[in-house]
Image (cartoon, rainbow, N blue to C red; front, top):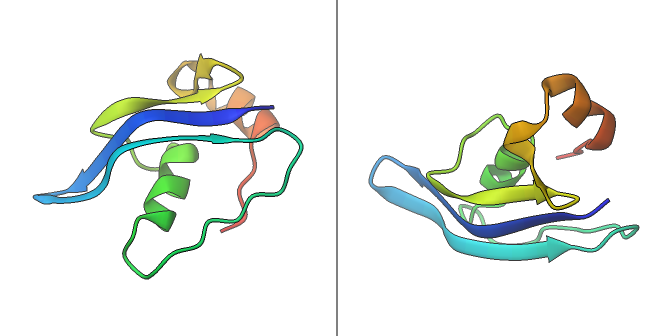
Length: 82
């Protein structure tokens, strides 16, 4: 399973937290998100789990937009441990 973002932008009101983030998480590897408070780690995880909708950009799971997965399909493929 591959998870990646393309030009992901997320804002809370006038405050942009993620601005044009593009990243690819390697399949079969453990990935840790590290950074200072307020840099967008939890925001990114919330976008992955669809608890938060990005302002723009796309999140892809195996090259398919996660917006196209039903809640059940996504839950079978993706689990997050914040």
